[in-house]
Image (cartoon, rainbow, N blue to C red; front, side, top):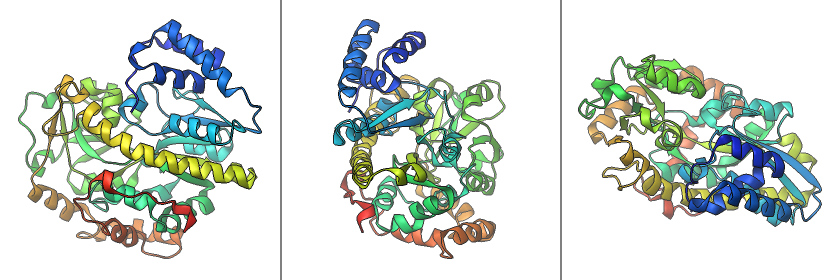
Length: 407
């Protein structure tokens, strides 16, 4: 997998990217790894730009990324560079993708909106934040619907993911879901918990103020667990933690490691619901492409999904260190973030309190709303069943890929 980039100033990166393009500069930075310097980056970006400009593109597409650091892909692989490289090579440069990152054209909360408005052609953001503009993404947010990361990948490869997720997104919201990484959302506590013992019981989280995303079901899940859920944009999260506006956040380890590891003390592995940094393309843009280019996009999405599946797992253990025990030298180990694995009995208690399986009443309204969009099917139960077609202990690397759109 790619190595994390060495420190380079934002000013230098912007200067080089203005000359050679963000996509070429990002790919050059990743290829240099630990040898990254300003002069090396400029030369590598120039070479990358020349290579990518060798063929006149039939189509140029803008790709808005809601990430703000160039080393994100090494810490939390979401596949955007892999997708750009694969698609441009697969089409011999007939499709040219230009990345616009650093939150300069869209943020986590509005990237999907910008794609629907035609401001960008493709975008990447978490499904939870995209749910503010596209409520159907909430089908992924029912607590304890997925028993593990392997079940998540199994679902996204599954042919039924077309009927249950992708087709409603295309029909009702005009976006085509391409690929994603997979995590389960946790409770990550701030600095006040650094000197406290590891959280060992669900009751210890009762009453704490926890930052949540735009996911309404995510907020409901925390409230059912007796936490105070406070919606705060990611861009304001650092200040909220520093000034005690919240005690912790509902997120996932890789995102925290990429942005604010110095503000986190304990990562409580509650395995609450799905966490997905996905890429999608405007369906209107997709339908304007010729069939050969449409096929190329789908095949590149498939290749990127496979690469992300493996790279994310490697980064999870070797770069982030979201494991107990931790590997030395990982981000979590360097920042003293303790990974807290709750007892099975505590996880079962959480599931009984907040999952639709054991506590269906609070979820009836959401299920009815999402069921209507899905075509009057029980969307929660359908995805729940698919997620259990494989054993709960299945390892991510043992989930076989399938071209979901060909079934």
